[in-house]
Image 1: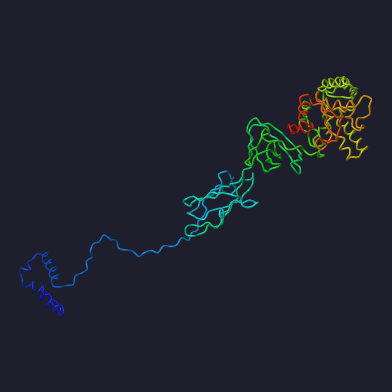
Image 2: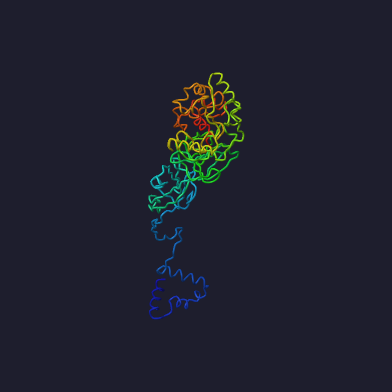
Length: 460
């Protein structure tokens, strides 16, 4: 076959036919070979004659490798995707929760904070295990109806170190007050809890709600300032979570100071004569006139003075007992109308000056005499009791001081109690409150005003 290849190369140089073609033209049997076999011979001949082989790819199961891609660093900062409560929402015991767009780190008390006007609020901050959420829960009692600011600072970052943009929003605690069935008292104060300016009491037979604008403590008691409903404008005892407290669990505030103001007295119905609080603060309306006035002569006293019929029986019994003991009692003054008290008070002003008159006489509307259940006693045939050095040292005065309470009568302004009773010592002034109340006050050893207040009778 080598000679064929040599001759083919020479022929190619001259432009001759191929040696194989020439040979086949002189070799008839070869010419008669089938085309397929002739082709095989050509292929084999080419291979055996040293012809350079064509490259044939070998099959393989491995894919052709591609160039290695260089990863792009994470340059996207995390964001807050949800917040509960959202801006303007109400903050409850569950605290505040947030979700992030990707896992984050460094969420703690320095980066996730709740603040108010007073500064940072103490809270517990926790991050979810997957880093996709965090919770802030105050570990102190929050103020009622107060706005707070939630802040997530730029200290929070993702796993690649990209920082969360600083963000903040406002939330608030509830302003809703819940009233369970019960009796509640509303208070209005002056410059301190000791200076009440108004009171109001009401009983609820079914649950109720209201709204309030503030909560604060006064004299170690919590109060909610109601801004809607029947207690609008009043403080009621309550908790910072908006739970109102009825008077069975919340004590009344201290006795009001003896301020010279004109507030409507509580319990001014004619049937509440024994529990009406009258002093320098609370007053009766000018039209208050008891409907059952009777002459004091019906009780065995000098006449032309009047007292309520409800007091007449015990008054008569007391006068009889006093007489049996040698104490001869008479009436210096009894019921006085509002107009009558105007004349009485002005008389003291003209005699002693306004400042002294306030100490020894009640301004119109503030006098217990208008109730029709108060009497200024004196000794039969004697001078006015206040002209004595101490009328209580007289037979009549001493007997009343020791025994009047047994018949339902009490000295309204005892010696040494002017800061509590609001008036100077008057051993001749007695008020009828009924035997049961008089016995309770006597046993307590306090003034009538103190006792009435402690029982809640000073409130509406």
